Image (cartoon, rainbow, N blue to C red; front, top):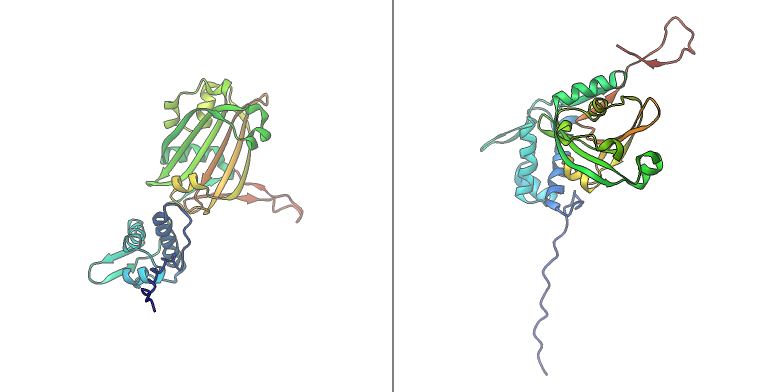
Length: 276
């Protein structure tokens, strides 16, 4: 009888993390941020009380099947935010919970707040030049045309990115805008400087999932919830000045409103924005 060599056993396939799915092509970034979110949530809701110890690095590596580098990256971010303190030879401990640096935009003082926010934040111009306008925006406002000056900017607050915005300006208006002016002022201010003034805006706000571009720029996981605000800006004759669309991190940027109604009237009195 002829003898056969024993069958070679294939090496076991590596499995993905127990707690985290690979949602980025760069899986290290995705997993680090998911671990950061998990630990951040536990610190915020008290699951990890102030002063108590977090699981050790080896425990986190084993529990979520992550690399030591990925775990350290997530812990380093929490440490930079002042959420934890790491003591050599002792472990990692939760500090007193504190709110992250956050901006607030009030509906009753909307454009005044925008100007104030511009002074508190830094901005990077990612792109500036003519480009095709998305079909959805052309249907929303045909005046914008098939091509427009497209301006994409990233805003940071206390060093952290919080807003990715893209403006589409009709070419007849856009040719008068200079790139340098957008590094010091809001788009509305720049449009008013070149005239005619914007006198009417219409805003729509909704929640959307972060696509690949927004996730990378805002340093969030793919599919994370973002606050999308789309504004249509027009002059006194109804001519389009710009369409402005922004995506904001909800943990860094809040929109709020103060409402009131006349207490002397009946229970049917209408609510309205309270202006200060």
